[in-house]
Structure formats: structure tokens, C-alpha cells
Length: 330
Image 1: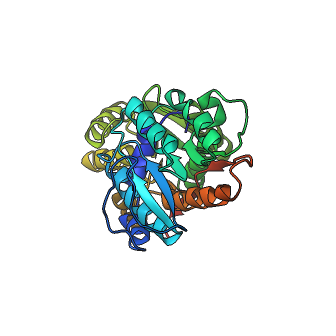
Image 2: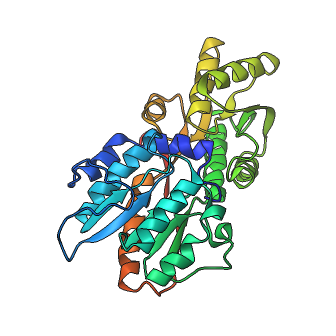
Image 3: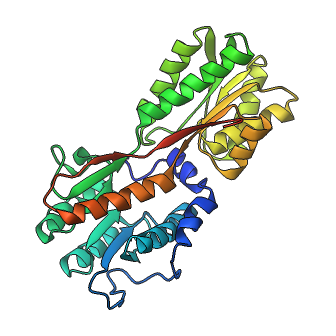
């Protein structure tokens, strides 16, 4: 991620099936949260301390992710310390600096609130031989290319958009003989990955279903607003039969708007995957969801830190959050 997390991505995070992360947490977390930089007091010479700094624990998905990493980390031999920057970039940097400089951290995974503000952490960790996984790319931290002892984790927005555009086109071909008027729900200006993601949706929709036409555009914020905006768009475009729903809130709002108008919505595709949206896939209200697999992402990040601990001077990796297309029957 180039930005800490987009509205769309936060919705996807919040949509994580609690079972995925809580099952991992059940591997052995006691549910306690040590203070920033605190010693876990395990007394084991062989255990390593992994410091995890999410955006803020007040975000439910971040709390779930923290519980998941406690459990999975423990199963991999770590004492896990969870910090809470509470969306304050300076507090996040200060807390991590303390953990790194005092030797309280053996490895760090941080979802940085503001990567540019955290650039000073990387040389500090490298000097101490402490491997890190941080969100984004090297360029977001003012770096030129991959670095020793640091891996970067990002979302491939173009691949997401390709999957979403292709699946919407597939639905139009299968259910509407390749012809449809499409309503496109877009994210707000400044949302991370907006240009790459939405550009790819449009490109691959056009390639897959060339006779489909986008006739209306709305902007997603929350579900109720999405329902109202889609309802208004339907008044001027009553023959819309396909919707790109952007995220869970946008898609569920679109479903509500079409039902309120007494209209069928044969083709709806979005990126998200909360329980309600996945239920809508099963019921046929949503054709496909492009779901980011954050539980898998968590395990790959921890596993990468474990590998990097063996040689903190080795060049890190550019990691990508896995994704999955979820359709009825899949």
C-alpha cells in the first residue's frame, strides 16, 4: 500500500472472517496486550520478540489482526508485543524507535500510518540487525529499490482491478448476452490505488464485454449513502443492469437500491468480502467478490520475518497481499 490503508481496503480488512484470524489466535494467545516496547518476561533465551504496530486498535479489523498475529506468532516461537499508535504517525515512530533502540524488538511488522514519516526507522533497524516488514514499497520511504533487512508488503491494485473488471464482463456475457448499461461506483479522490484499480476495472471490463457501456457513476462512502446515490442514478438510468460496486458498502447499498426500486440486478461485482457480502454471493445477489486474503498475508509476513532473522543483512522481498475470486459455488 502506498497509503496506510484505503477506505476500500479498510472495508476489506474489516470484512475478514473472524474465524480465519481467531483460529490463528487460538493457537496460543492469552489475549493480553503488553505496553509499547515492554518486556514480555517469558524468561526464554530461545524466544524472540516480534513487535507488531497496526494503524490503530480501535479499528476492529486491526484488533482482529493483532489477535491473529499473537496466536500465529506464538506458534512460531515469538513473544508478540502489540503497540497501538491510534492513527498517530509520530507516536507510532516514537514507540517503534524505543522498541528497536532498546533491544526490546527482535523483529518488527508495522502497518505505517504515514510511511514518509517512518523513513528514519529503517536505517535504525538495519544498524541494530532487526528485520522489518512494512507496508508499501521502498519508494514510499524515500528509498531506491530493495534494502537489506527490510521487506515491503503491498496490494497489487492493478491485479485486483483486472479480476474485478474481468468478472463483471464475464457476468454480462453469461447473463446479459454481452450487452449492459453499467453503473460504476468509484472511490473518493485520494484513495490509495484508485487510479490503478479503477483504471484496470474499466480496461478489462471493456476487453471482456466490449458491448457494455458505463452510463452512470457514483461515489462510495457508506452503505446508506451508496443506496441513496444508486437509487438516484437509477431514476435517470432505469435500464442499468450491471454495477461495479467498489467495496462491501457500495455493493450492499446497490442491492438495497435495486430492491427498493423493484428492479433486478443480474450483475454485481465488488472488492471486499465481509460475511454479509459473501452471503450475498451464495444467494446470487452478488456475482463475484474479489477478496484480499489478509489471514494469508499475515502468515506470509511473519514467515518472511522468520527467514530474515537468519540473515538480517540479506536483501528483503516485495510481498503482495494474496487475493481470491469468490463466486457462487467456489
